[in-house]
Image 1 (cartoon, rainbow, N blue to C red):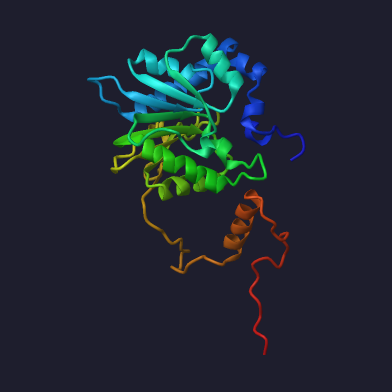
Image 2: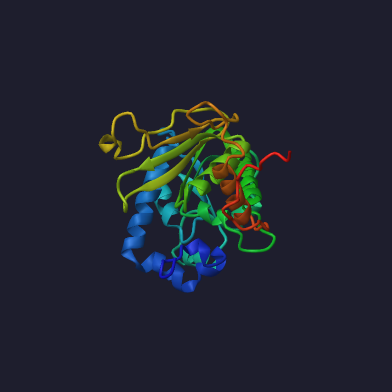
Length: 282
């Protein structure tokens, strides 16, 4: 749409978007600092960590270390990984308490199995849904991230990943790859009726199934309507009102073609004949 504002992940690779100018905003812009701190606090809260002893946490897409500051305040230890050298340089200048690693989350989490008691990520996961290079395949990069994250987490721990999904198809892509990697859990949505305060948190359980937390602001949601999307490690069949599978319907075909386009594959253009049933030749 002409004149629309492009999302940051649509402008190019994150290591180029988060340059020195962007990195400085995370130490000078009070609004950014406030929002980042609030989301970090919520993510740590959803981890449901033990209160009797400090935990060892992973911060994926740690940036300038704002999330790490809150983790440190809560008495926990942490390691951060980020793809932007400019953001990590800011974190070093701020003399944060955590350890920092330069790395691409789409290439996997480089840690031994069972290293961490939990993981948080703020505004980073959606970057994996876009192909910034010819070699990038979003589903594969997401699966690589989730499989290595699952391995790096201690069994029974959680990962809480805050993200800004572009659409429902992107949410489906993310959750399906997490499920394939072995996670259970679901999407927790805070303030679902607000346009500005609405936040998505992918709450994942490693090794055991847990009770999905309730999103904030749920008291204003109509009774019987839920804004939490949970998933388990099993295949589901989508059916229409008559009980018939919608597979190979026109909507199903158009959605499949759109997914292939996002993967960078060549797909025929949509026409009025797309998904139309052929008449028998007799």
